[in-house]
Length: 258
Length: 270
Image (cartoon, rainbow over all chains, first blue to last red; front, side):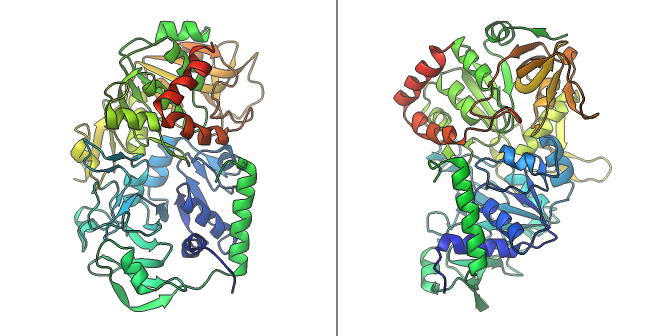
């Protein structure tokens, strides 16, 4: 048994969800770590796309920003930002989009815009960026978020990007043909949508985590699938590659970068 | 044809109070020193358009140059908040700041439509999202061929585009390489433009036949400004100073540390 943190478990579980043949639209932070971990382990041929226009990028260290030079230098090609959003994202070339947020509800709608009323914000967050269109244009969406009652809420203050809307067939009623959030990977467990209601339900629990812990960290009455799996613990190889990646990144960005 | 001007002369002549200004550069090639000159010349009531306001607009907003911000992602990438933009939106300091918020896709489409001389941008976007409820400039249009409902927003037609590029040649043509962002579109969408460059060369020399070049006659002024993107970067010249983006979080968090930094590093550093 190798020691690992819940954050490492989350990143590794997210990496495993990616397939070698995927074309993945990557965000900064945990999605970037998970995508590159997948590329450096079981999915060497995965195509990683960052919204700055880099296609097929293979960074040696994780970028701090979405447009670090490292992404461009290691890419197959780099296109303009309008081309990225028009031809590649809207054009339907991306199989998986990775998203995160400040707030999420049971239907995996996300808020990265504002806490409190829009006109009189309590906390003004950065906003949607690419998310509103990533959420509907990618074949499916994986979400990575650490779980807690302040972020996993009964009702989000603002729908920055569509998940399953009000549930059921809401996406298709809006004319959206893509699957939406198929996995929500947290530091405690993995959620997937119920096939009918589209509510996100727990399908796999990370080793050592209890149902009570999950319920305690969820702002709605959390449901569990009829048969819940235990997430496989990180392997020594997965942990080694992830830690090397973080160590290289830290070295490249200087000790000041936590 | 573009003219070679000093930074001070270019800003003085081309950027006017009340203008709508797009200073673009998607993480790469952000026109930082041009932003500093606009602050030094105390431009006021600007409508500032930019996909990612970044440090450059945090500084312009905090120094009172802006009356309105048009944006799609207002954070310090990989670090956290833009504290000056937040203080303006949440507390009205140093003055009230109107804002119009879009998605990246919308902003990119609006620049492209502006460059194409169209009045609006049409794209598949904002489905199921709340922004159309709070931004009256997000509307929809029905495709006359398929009946599909698509998002529509006005194109960007700024008074001035300000960008930073790698090189200009002696004729004032401008070359961009690396992460291109929306700079070409922003210049072609605008009435006037300032391009700061790392280097002025006799001739671009051997190059890719499809190199991204803005011909001299599409640019108003070219300014030689080495390290003009710092702490952003210029591909092949210098790297992004990621540690400064991290430091900025502390500098900009409080009004007095921000003002002190601006005084030393911008106002008194011409």
